Amino acid sequence: MTTDYWAHIYHDDPKAGDEVEDEDFDMEAELAKLENDPNAWENLSK
Image 1 (cartoon, one colour):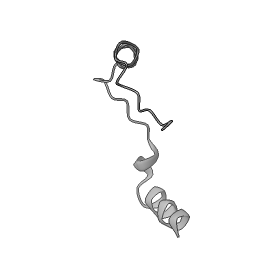
Image 2: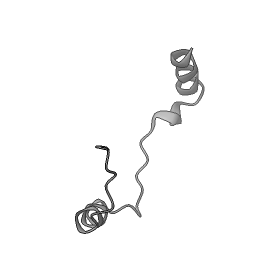
Image 3: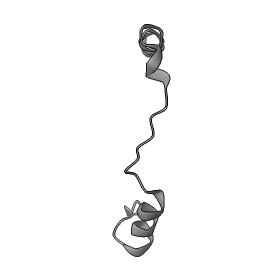
């Protein structure tokens, strides 16, 4: 059912598959935040 849903989304609106680039997103800044903040990562080993 999910496959059928997405097939209709892409068939009905061909622009749905186009990539969108976020001009405000800065990968280097996000990685720097993660490296400098020890609490940025979620601890899964409990």
